[in-house]
Image (cartoon, rainbow, N blue to C red; front, top):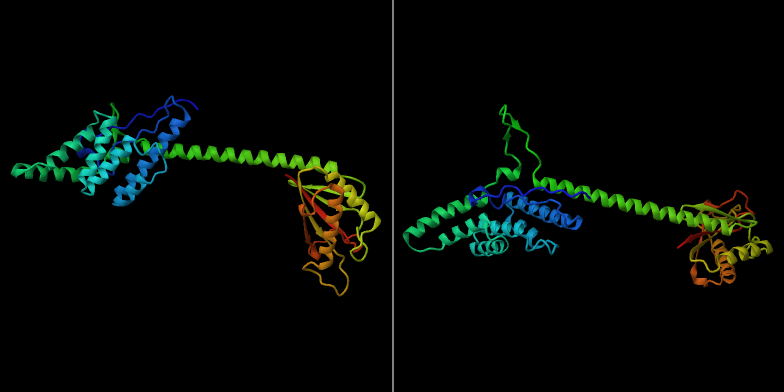
Length: 338
């Protein structure tokens, strides 16, 4: 990823120029630390942007929940998060908590002008006597105005003029908007990588199924690749009119079972029946399920796999593989490489 950096936005030199809704613009750039630091910076930028939007709408409790409940260890002590916490608590009238968070900001940024201004006003509000009362009134008014104001630079509404014609230049995206755009880009890249990985896995499974089909093919055994699985049908019916295997049917199942030996595969067997006059035309049957169980027994003996490794079921009469009743006295086998 190429190295780039978006500079911090202008910070208010005093509290009157920004409040809980505005605050300072969060840096969301990518420094030489690489993708990890860029992603962390983006997460903090998005968190502050969303909490600021909640405060701007009047939902101070929601803003605090966003800031306190963030599942991001790097955000808890970030100066921008601490500064916004201080502003929200000041707007709620909890000056002690506001001072606590601004002091934590100054531990990391000793010269931070917003934190210094906030602490100075809170100190003035704590004085005694008539002058202190007047100072509290003025400072309280300024403090309320500070935390309620929406700084124009944060909203991206400052109009710059060029040096020649004095025409307003269109405002560029705010850093919060840039962070949102970058987050969407990273999310799109992640989704694209996941899609590529799914495509690679599907291609691998399809190749494994094609290789398996080649191994299973034998006289009278007809494997066909279906996505990541192999559907096996038999050229002739395997059973007599009941549930007794024909000699050819037993041989075909023995060949298939032998070729499954030692393979890590999932095997599903569906029994079929011929449709005869007066019999149900849908819903499966006991006979078709019995045929699936007998086929599972034969494949288990030939492959050495446990009988419980096979899944059996009755197919619906409408899913008969052949138009010929005699050929439908059979089973079909779905084999999926693991």
